[in-house]
Amino acid sequence: MIGTYDYVLYSNDLDFLSSYWSKYELAMTFITAKLDSTGMLDVTGTNDWGRLTQGGHNTEANMLMYRTLITGSTLATWANQTSLSASWAALASTLQASVYNHNFDTSVG
Image (cartoon, rainbow, N blue to C red; front, side, top):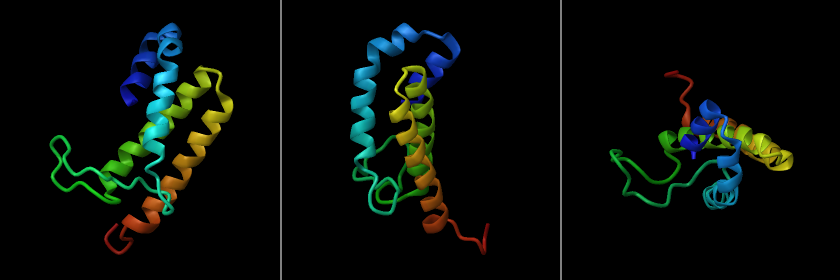
């Protein structure tokens, strides 16, 4: 998902974005459905590449989710989907606050 953003950012290939937009949107619908009442991504699969401590509300996966939402919001703007852009940006903002509130230990920093 983030790679799609990188490709379009550096190539300005808006025809590519247009041709894959419906599939991109489906993927975003799938992953954003895993944002739960905490506002964070609830990782339901534990078999992931190179990461041993997967599952639940782990910070690493939520940082990837945050970047996916931010880049997705920009892609939606480029695809003239302003309401979707605003929606994904709002989810990113909620996610950011939730990670800070639930996963950040202020005594450690």
